[in-house]
Length: 419
Image (cartoon, rainbow, N blue to C red; front, top):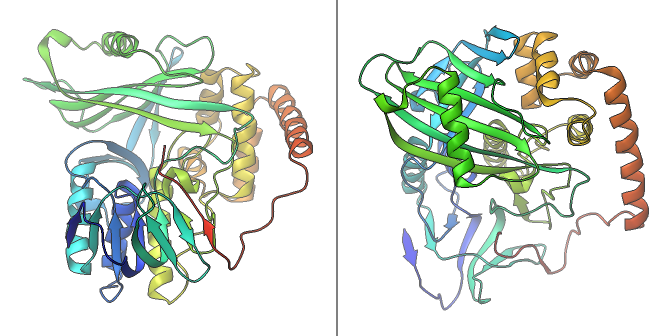
């Protein structure tokens, strides 16, 4: 049910409203459909209906999942390349997978239809939570929807600036060839032969769909984005390292992205009945910018909770100890205590590949986390730990007493239009 640009005499009444219709909301819709929640009254509030190939997600996990029919490609081994050489990582029992956005959006649209969801084609403004229901307003303050719960996936900055604030920023070219050029059996996860920035770390990677079509991407972790010309120059340089003749290849698509890497806090539940998902809900791993696996977990947890008659509140995306480890790692990289290439090289060299990937996903045990920590350079990381502790103490003293917990009742505006 599609409603665009219409001011309702009274807001639509639903059980669950999804504010924002991108990747996080698409995964939630599919999960609701999978758990047969057809009796749930659902609304989606977004001025744009997502379609087509506007992004690519890469993630790891065990084969045989719900997403397998949608994958463009997957690999049971990947390469990590440094100036010292190439390391081939066998991933079994996991695999690395590539998922393009079009089939995700198509599946979400089909789920909307089966759920009988109301789609409101207008931007959302403030969310006013009275403790019993949430009213979603448009930017002019007119009510659009009243819902028992709201899942808000609009991008927004952290509640306060982090002690370290970096970005994962990238540009990728989808390259097409007329003859066999790529090895479809092996992806390049990280290739650190790229020229390294003065502050941060850079790498390239290659995700081949088949022997004639692949995504070749240049990525940086660092404090600032590049110019268009700098990204293209970096991609041309990386293509040269791969031995690719760009005159014989066609750039079919271009992908760009900027993802926050920060120890600043994201408030996952700003009021009693508003829950944030995606990056706004803490799904982005601060030390890497990886987000998709946590979004997938959030969607499944929301649907299972609703199917069981519980509030749709997912667990924290990452354990607290992982967020602390990420803050320390970011500080060490930002202050130059450890080089980015050396940091990741030791991580992959001194741990089984499966442990590294599960650590980056936030699913390792405390014992495994200790093993990962032992693989880091001791003295530089000790300095980063002490610096992080001092930074936390200074921030706490500046803020004064700890903030009060989320209230259980009383009207509260839980958000404005995303930035």
